[in-house]
Image (cartoon, rainbow, N blue to C red; front, side, top):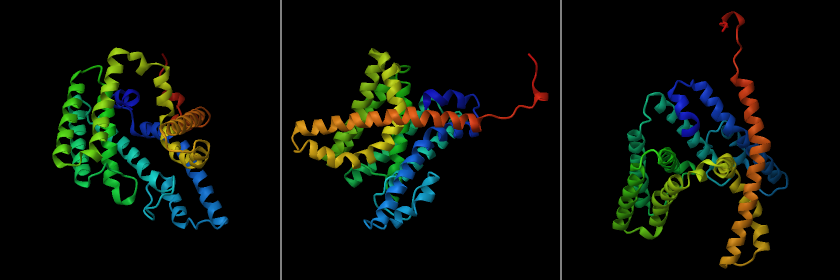
Amino acid sequence: MAYSYEARIGQGMPAPAFILQRMARLYPLYIVCLALAFLVFLSKMWFGKGDGIAELRCVVPNALMLPCLFNDGLGFPLNQPGWTIFVEVVLNVLWYCAVRQGLRSLGWKMAIHLLSCICLWSMAISMDRYLHGFNNSDLLEGMLRGVLGFSGGLLLFQCRQDARILLYFAALTALALAAIGLHGCADRVAPLAFTVMGVLPMLIWLFARWRPALLEGRVSAFLGDISYAVYLLHIPLSLLLQKPLRLAFPGTDLLSVLLKAGVFGFVLIIASSLSYRLLEVPARRWLVQRYGRRPVVLGQVTPT
């Protein structure tokens, strides 16, 4: 987002153009997943394996990328991902407004990230668990997770330009771990806090400093391209492959777990790559060409 849009928004990119670009990226695969889930629930109702009425009522709001308020149960992607997509869209709109107002300096990004970090880890400590954010009852948790990850990503995008970012993450990690340890819930929350706030930013910073090609080459571009498909497809693929993987690799030993994870990861990458190349890119190109062009009046064209 920072690489593709921040400079253009700051230079005056119109809101309709930004929304069109984002929806052309987010909506095609999302609506395909929604349609497939709709067919699954219809088949359940047809064969008498579940009424699915609550989930079916979620089709209309979810088709508009709005969360479903009828049901709290698991119904991918008719309910739970409705919240996560909703959070994604809301953050995009808020970020656009912030950049248009000039609030895109390093200081502002640090302030937003720091505030979200304080709120998120304070809530996690009080609940003695990491935040969820999928259902109607925990929308605030999902928003905090989204803001923390989004603002953290914007900071890490600038890590090669300013070394203070790494010092900031190091200090923030130490403070978060100290607060968690003092509260006495380190066994449940601290490992994830250390990974999210410390290990991942450090790895990204090291790659950017020592081997920048790793973050700017074809591999990183490929991972960025398929990231949205991975985000949407990992849950339905895990549901589809759960039983076959258990039959193929029985047992809970380390080797079986690694084999299951490896096969699942390979299938997920292949499926996401096919989705990006065969669905997302053609659909995005068509939508931008279809709705992004404006008719030009010949009398208004200035000769050059």
